Length: 319
Image (cartoon, rainbow, N blue to C red):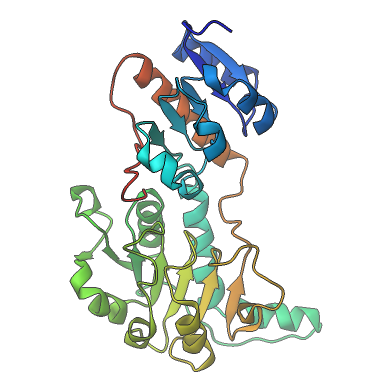
């Protein structure tokens, strides 16, 4: 392989014929190399200038021509090991690729918890007719921690259910004005929690967010409120969350992201009161990887033309 050529390596997500056309159109002078697995890619990594797919530390040391890595994941945690953070290699993510299905997943969990759908499922398994008064989302407050792509999509969906939407975000953004009724600074976290009927975590796991919800925070929530997390586990302290569920500080939880994955069979979250557990599966749809691919292709065009990249990760901040 000629070292003077711009080489684009792709692994971990195989482009179809239409996507290969998009790649060649985005970088007509580049050599596009698609690999079936990591080992094949790493065997030639010395030649790569761009890699779509994660790079391990031992391979990074040999990647002397590497300038940019694109992660197929929205949260590029796995790529942020010390050697990569210290390197000059740019990192972009597929942030936003799962925003739509994740917001749908949160709405599903909100509806199931609010209407006590678990009671219906128990009755169905027993072939028992069980009618009861249940809630509705109209008029309730959806509190969103992290107003990125998924958070804003959830805000729009919550509005469609006639809910009030409040949020907390690291930086304020004008585009939330039509979707978010009130934006709280982090210093008013407890006020935000007390005002929410659903607390939905869409924020990334960073040194600033890890363990941000502990005993004091869960005690600040309404006893009728629900906790939902679909971004990353560990933002809530597990011991505090379990106490909140077992002792009735909150009404229940919908957990798609967990601090330990896969969730062990002996985890107490499986049997926690009024808790719905899903296996970090909210964004596992056919369209999610396609959106991630589109993000990469647009960035490839930008890279070739010398424009700033979208979804550029701050390697020190972790997102």
